[in-house]
Image (cartoon, rainbow, N blue to C red):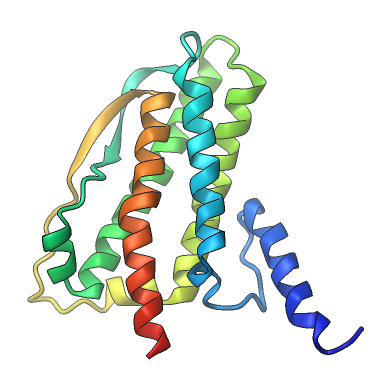
Length: 192
């Protein structure tokens, strides 16, 4: 195998293992900076949202699930320190991860959810784990932790959802909004 084939092979292997939620050793640390990677996750989230949009039976939760508010005030966001943005993204990912796990448990206790619903929920769980690993490799967790004490971070705004469709809409909006904005800035800053 030639030397020029190894990076391509490593990238291919990394992309194949990411949906499993496994940390990929030797993966390029800035893989999330490749827009195609994030676009793949956004596409999966939109697909899940579209599938659940027409779902009437088996898509409602027996209780409300808390999710992050995905609205972005661009003026405020651009004025935020990257560390503050990292905190907001980490909190949002953590809340989405908790929400989808809770949703999975509620669906398991409901009347036989379809295989398609289970597949999309499982994919979302795996994707959230992979995104967390990719952000960790980008250094987002360190930025969020190393935020100075005096820096005020507003509490994460939340609301509740009662259906899978609403969850996937929030998930998709979060990926397209705050996560994309944060990774774009963090990747640009890392290129300097």
